[in-house]
Length: 203
Image (cartoon, rainbow, N blue to C red; front, side, top):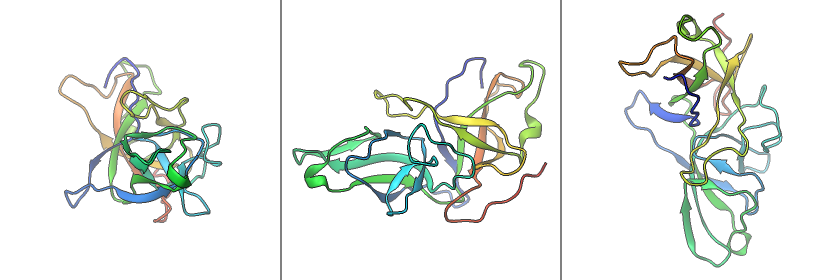
C-alpha cells in the first residue's frame, strides 16, 4: 500500500487447495485488442476469449459483464511460423495461417487475486476495513499495460451499491503499510463469473 498509484492488474494470490493453475483457451488470430497479464477476460459467443468488457474492447463498459477469469499470457505461431510465448497479446497480431492463439486464463472461481484499490476517504485518516465483503467492478485501463513487462495496469473501481464483478475478501499489506493509505492492495474473488452464480453485496 502506498501514497502512489501503481496498478498492476489482478494477480493470483490464494486458493484453498494450495495450487493455482491457468487453463488454456483460444484467442482469435487478428483479435484487435491488446490483453495483458492481469487483465479480466470473458468468453465471447464464438467460444474464444476477449477482454472482459461489453464489446471486448477497451472502449466497452464493464457493468454486469460476467468474467471467465484473469489473463496469464499467450502462445502462438507468428506469421512466419515461429513459436512465440508472451505475457501479453498485441492487438491485431496475425498468426500463422490465421490459426487461433492459445491464451492462458486463471478461470477457477475459487482463486483469489490481489489488486489496487483507491481509498475513497481522506488518506491518512480513513480506514478501508469496511470494504471487506463489498463489491466493485474493474477499471479498463488504456492502452492497458506495459509492453516491456506485459503486466496490466487495470485496478478496482469504487464500491458498487448492488452487485459488482469482484468481491473484496481482505487486504494484502506489509508491516509498514496501513489501511488508511491512499492506495491499498485488496484481495478479491470474481463475483460475476461465467462458471458460477454471483452473490449480493453484504451492505
